Length: 79
Image (cartoon, rainbow, N blue to C red; front, side, top):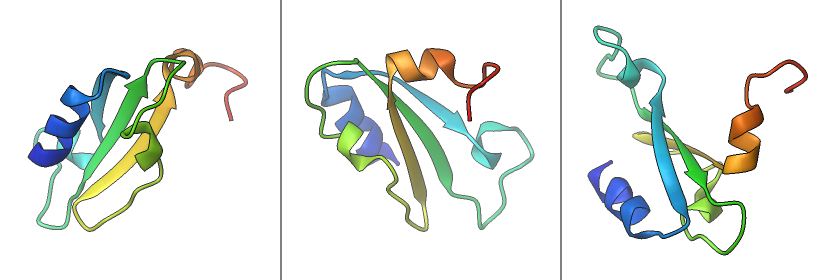
């Protein structure tokens, strides 16, 4: 996780990271919990971290989206 956060910090397109899932809540993580991270990026320009959207491993799941999409996330009509 620390290596991914360092990579995200170095990517100028990344505007934020959001930890979700059991790791984001006190008392919820178990020995089987991974890190679920939403990566929010600028709307334009390339991003190596954005290209990791959909990455899944035993320890890390990544959802990447541009800021415009994030602003609409969870609003009525968002699938």
